[in-house]
Image 1 (tube, helix red, strand yellow):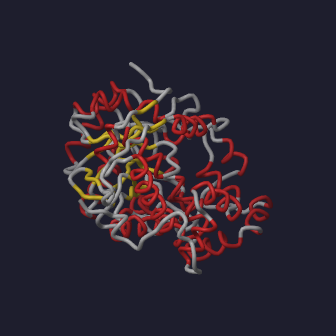
Image 2 (cartoon, rainbow, N blue to C red; image 1 turned 135 degrees about the vertical axis):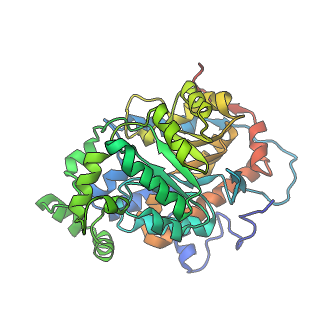
Image 3 (spheres, rainbow, N blue to C red; image 1 turned 60 degrees about the vertical axis):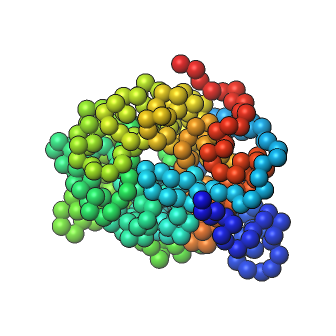
Length: 411
């Protein structure tokens, strides 16, 4: 098996000598939490909250993190000391590690141009990159930037019998997207206090508060001037001739809504010719229904704690979903991943791979394009280091580790 980590320049947690950009980033930001703190300092509050925030009092965000921290893995001794193989296969395609970039909306509000940085970084590292329908990057451009690893996430657009949704699927097919991800965990608009406090609107409408925030965020302003106002270019072809960014934002607000029904998913399954994933499953019975109608993957997710504050931690639902469909479908995990070890916790519990959102964006917010590459490298390295510590030479061996998971739900 290909050893993604060993094939690169040797790197260790203590190997930070020198003045290269990589060495500087390692010294300044040894963890994702360090990147988060730096991003919070560099980004206006209205941008930072679009990613870091959650529903209600952020209890769902905290629950995701706490539940991951509670999972204990018992290492084994006497394992082969040869190379650690972090690579994995998803839907018949080879990736360097069981981690990828989750779909995220409003990335360009958090950091203008973030989508391009992350797409390039994912292509370079050969990990999945999920382009979002409401991101600041048209799916065709995402496919050009990350041709070997691009997936596409679709929200429900029900008007005119899903005319726009089916056309987006056609465009994704023609652009060479490998996996279609259907989102079902946003049945309505959630109340997110951080966004309300900051009066977030698209396009931006300057107020005294936002001007004051921008005045102390020069790097973010420079990125905004370089990349322009955030928008949703995937929707531009459906907004008339030469639509303004305000026209596109209004279209997204008006047209995107609700969660796909299983009957609707069956219709999309008939149209899409490649692997198809349902994102936002929390109950094993829903996972079974999705697989029964022909979907190839199930993504266990509570939308990062950004929709229903009372929802269980996503990791606590993962084992039940794996028991229900793990032998019939690819199971992905998405919910609070902050490190390579968190990703391995999910894999040890039966997931085929974990996806992270905030962690990757914090890298961009802290150090721009360099940060995108840096956090990607760091997470893959953390996976390799943790596997070495646990005595698991490849990801398959993780499933045999003794695990204590106190929060796991039983059905």
